[in-house]
Length: 175
Image 1 (cartoon, rainbow, N blue to C red):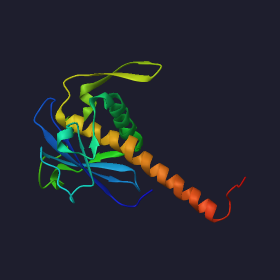
Image 2: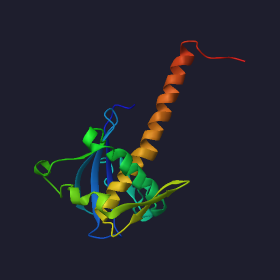
Image 3: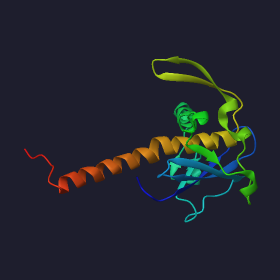
Image 4: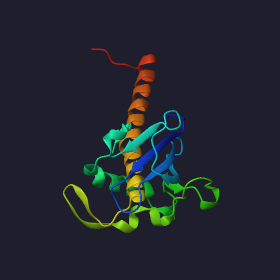
């Protein structure tokens, strides 16, 4: 995996509460997503973040989050949360005392309280979502990006690098 830290901003509006911008940091070495803080919704600033995520195409984000991805985003969130009691969670927030600007991410901001499992079918879990906030949606969008886009791209790059190394060592097969 890449050893660079990934910074992202997720802008969200259209749900319960005021519009917001989530600032998050992903460490590919530890596979940990750190939710840094919420700001009032603001424009994406080139050079300060590497990935911008928004459901609004007019903002020209690097990733357009579509509401049709909500089920996948919920699954990504629960995968990243993991079993916190076993210590395998890959999602954390900076403590409120350390947040100097903006609002800290609190347990109340997490999507858990707005989501309930509503059975399962052949395609997987079904969810019922009620009164979800902009903050919770921003967290879901960040988890969705890490699980489905960033890590998939990193895994493909790692595979290609490994394959190249094997070919360079003469382990390739010719026909």
